[in-house]
Image (cartoon, rainbow, N blue to C red; front, side, top):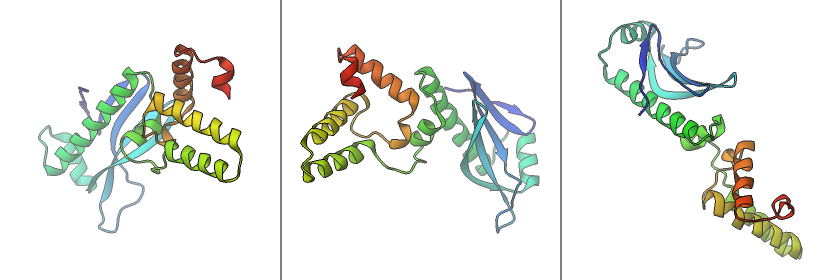
Length: 181
């Protein structure tokens, strides 16, 4: 499990070039006058923010960061932080970290699935009488499902994912021509 440390103004965790920070976003107050507390993930100089679901005033934030005892809001922030650290740690351990994959794991993606997209495309090819295209699309779907399972989020299909998929197919004995098709 990921450990965290209290820094003056945030919780912070780092693994393999990926940093997780908890910050208060003071750019714009909400209608209730409070500011959202967010988790900032930094990977390869790119930042992505995930909400913790907690809003605080700057005074609450300062008080919470100065103490090691957690209020209800503090426990929710720490719980969110620990979940993010666990996901980052798991992805880094498997060598497949990307911000998109992290978002997909946390349920923050668009929800579109590679499986249903390919199945729909294959159906369109069949209706149009494009049998060769239908078989290629269906074959690609079967191969992708063999590697990634029956629920592959489109947002998780990254260059790293494709490289791993290609290695998987190569290890299965598929030829380079088959893989590239």
